[in-house]
Amino acid sequence: MPFTFKQFHIDDSHCGMLVSTDAVLLGAWAQLSTANTILDIGSGSGVLTLMAAQRTKASTTITAIELDAKAYEDSQKNIANSPWPQKITLLNTSIQQYCLTAPAHNQFDHIICNPPFFNHGPQTTHTARANARHTNTLTFKELLNAIKQCLAPLGLASIIIPHTSEAEFMQALSQAGLQVSHNIAVSSVQGKPPNRLLLALTHANHNKAVITGSLYIRDKQGQYSAEMINLCQEFYLKL
Image 1 (tube, rainbow, N blue to C red):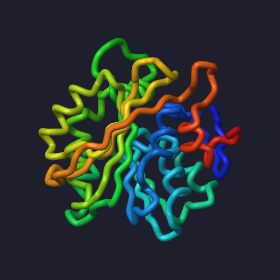
Image 2 (cartoon, one colour):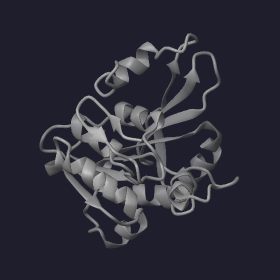
Image 3 (cartoon, one colour):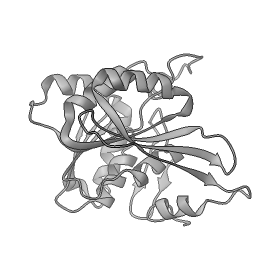
Image 4 (spheres, one colour):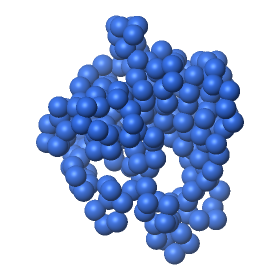
């Protein structure tokens, strides 16, 4: 369903994964503003790419990678119709293939990804949606190895995952030679247990304490929390 933000429009009609609160929260939270180069892995409709374009300086360059041909077409149109097409290079490929062909020096200040995260359970017969939600085409191990290769020495990667996937993700993280610098537990409603984690990752040679925190999206009355409003008010029309 098409979705209009304050500065751009997203048509995700052909995407396996539609615009979600997860994506908007990640795009608003990630520390993107000072990055010169950004990589969006699995860009889908382009929502994270365009949020990054809105939040960064004119000289920032963004590379967006999307495997699914239909999602790539939607993303092409959304980027072309946005205020920032000159900042963005969109590639119709997998991150695995990109890593095989990209120059060794082609590393990014910031990597952003809202990855597929289910590795079990029933899958929809809609192939694009199944691949967007399940680790059929991109496992945590493959994703983190790609981040390790593509992340600049002092770079940062921002990810959102289900709270239930934390143990599996952390195991793959240690094997990839990466570490967590920020870990924010996200609850859908005030007082409820967290169901998502916002994570910032660095190379494992940074000996810094992990910054932890929490936030909730809506209060007990169903209204957006002050923190959610502060993060997303530059994007959502009604904030």
